[in-house]
Length: 216
Image (cartoon, rainbow, N blue to C red; front, top):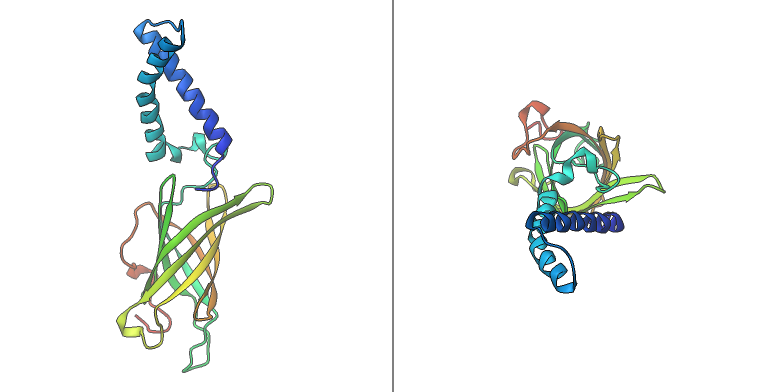
């Protein structure tokens, strides 16, 4: 992710390497007397450093001890729930629908993030997603572009389309995601989400209620 603290991360890797180097030399009872002796110890140290980096990238980046100073982005993994308030008007009634129940599942690793949004009528998958973070400008946002595919039963009034959504990340730890979206169908709207659970739901949960347009 482009928001990483590059210099800090490089310094941490150097410190890890130096610590592993000294530990390896002490364990083997070796002294660094010349370039070749140092190179031999460094050669043995590299696999250990790679293992530490692998552990960090796979798991440890989520630990609170690294949050902020080394890992600038929050851990949003799991399922978020809330509502969409669209500006679209129903051509049959001329009215704007009431808020639409929605969930957003987020799969996040140290290097990438993907988002899947579901309502009772559609599912959308992100194909470009990243954080936009700037402490000096007080910016904490998550944005992604997506492709939305509705149920076959509603395609006459809700066709497949692409769109983009920008979420403001609220709170530390994160309390809400507040977003605005726009689509190639020239529709817009607002989304407000709160955290539901750590697991990623693969279907829209019935406990969130029915879709206000179709009643499904």
